[in-house]
Image (tube, rainbow, N blue to C red; front, side, top):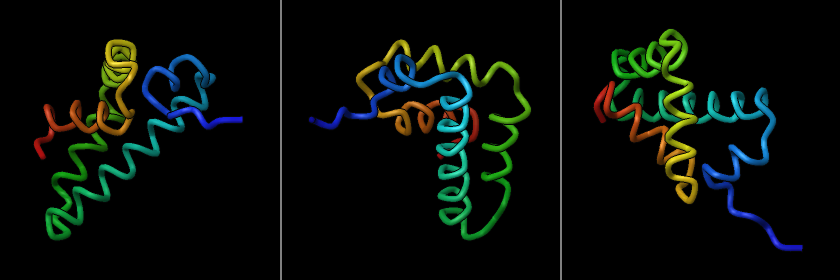
Length: 89
């Protein structure tokens, strides 16, 4: 048996909706923490990422649309690029 790369396309095709959401929320947590560390423990960037994902109801559909558009890309790269357009890097 061979392992399958966990690309954005695999996330969309193989994961159930609730599992997909949890997986993406995990990516958000990782991005938010990395931003917190990068920003020398300033919480503004982390808060932007959280607000963008959890409060803006248009964000999740945009993420899923990007996963569909870039199925061969790693999910973290897709979500990171989208978060950067809203919250900077």
